[in-house]
Image 1 (cartoon, rainbow, N blue to C red):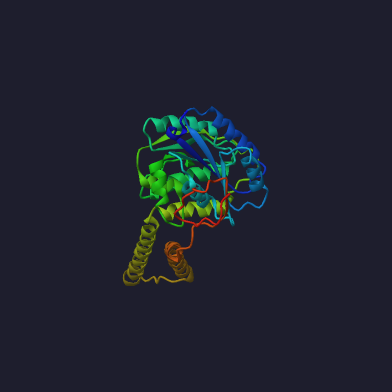
Image 2: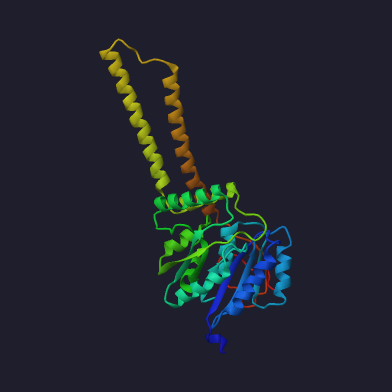
Amino acid sequence: MDTSDTPLLSIVIPCFNEEDVITSTVNRLRAFCATVKDVRVELIFVDDGSQDGTRARLKSFGTEDPRIRIIGFARNFGHQVAVTAGIDAARGDAVVLIDADLQDPPEVIHGMLTLWREGYDVVYGTRTDRPGESLFKRVTARLFYRVLSRLSDVPIPLDTGDFRLMDRRVADTLRAMPERDRFIRGMVSWVGFRQTALPYQRAERLAGESKYPLRRMLRFATDGILSFSTKPLQISIALGMFAAFLSVLGVLYALYMRLFTHIWVEGWTALMIAILFLGGTQLISVGILGEYIGRIYAEIKQRPLYIVQEYWGFDDAEPVLSRSPVPGRR
């Protein structure tokens, strides 16, 4: 087979402290690679500053398998940035994003490849079931996707994570998008092209702990909403107008009671309620405005999106990056 004419599939796998599961992940991905026909595969593992033996284990696998490449961050920069680094380094005609915890089955990629060959530029996995997750996580995730869909200025598919296949054109477009607060699934929706869903059942996490506790989930939700919508600002304006409307009603009520009855509107309770309501509305509005200003501040500093400690398994001529200098390759 002439490999120069064979399409290349780049699979990007972000990792953070996945020592307990990384062996199973590599073996599962290698088993998938053995079943792929007429496509070459490269496996790009992005070690997001792991503090365990994740990177060492990846290197041991890489010495046996030339398809494995490793991008090692100097510290933890976050899941979305790790995904971005993998996209930056990917050379494939198509790029697949998949997490290392095996909740997204690699075998689903076969269906993605089929749809890609039919002409779709993006094939995103839509979760039909989420076994192994708590009721709280399922409910809040469902609520998040629906709130985001209502607030976003661009349609974002429901119940869809980062597990997806993207054509080279889409990956190149993402590389040209410089924002610091990354929300990949929203960015992919924003770029357009021909997109379709592929339903699948998510599996339970094989081992280890979720890297998205409640605090990170809230931060992730905030990034998703504020990165793709100005409606929170409109909501703050609506709250201010509503508060002003209530205050006018209160004034009219007080005047009516004074002019047409012998009752004075009095009492500290009503006054304190009004003060607390107005104060709360103002603080919410200032907080929303502050989030947008904070993002502007992060953008204008123009710091590198990520810092790479080492590239491992890449040839001298690769990767060609647009965001971060390459301190050294092996």
